[in-house]
Image (cartoon, rainbow, N blue to C red):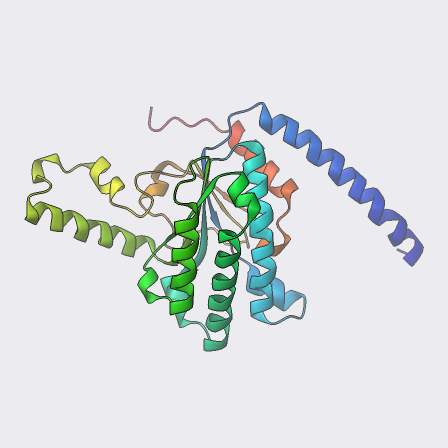
Length: 262
């Protein structure tokens, strides 16, 4: 394709995408929207490699997509978003990449505490995981944003940082055992509801889990909570994930029949 044709095609494609996006949005808004969406944000490093950038540049671009994703979810009525940002296993990565990610977390969480959109839309922000493993500045940023948004109840945004699904279940079991030993809980009253309430998510299970980046596994994300979640996997790297992609997933979700064993 000649340079002139490419220049002409680009704005035309942009118009086509916008029209298609508007049509999809109208379709999604008349259907049942998942109340809670979990998101495995994969493909940041591969995106960086493919575009000739350092790994942490991919994470920075991915954090920009997070801001857009939250807006897209709010627009269609998703009440809770849980985003898998950093697993306990990710500490094994190169020190330079981990340090860059930690600096990014501290910066973005602090920014959310001061974000007028978060205030106006009354979004409660929480960080789920073994946060004691994180550097002091990240822990301080977590306390700041959680304190600033603790009374908001219109939407909830969860970031899973230093998170592992198996570790979450272990932490819940330890908390339950401690309550049984102290007499606060009776062994006779232990059931799935009690276990769910002691998980980081407090018994709020995702209706839908999306994973970008081309992999088809949960990778230790919300293992207990995902028992009846609808799962969608896409090859798109997270920094390239568009509103159009999000709406397509929601439309596909709406076309599925959720029977919960019935």
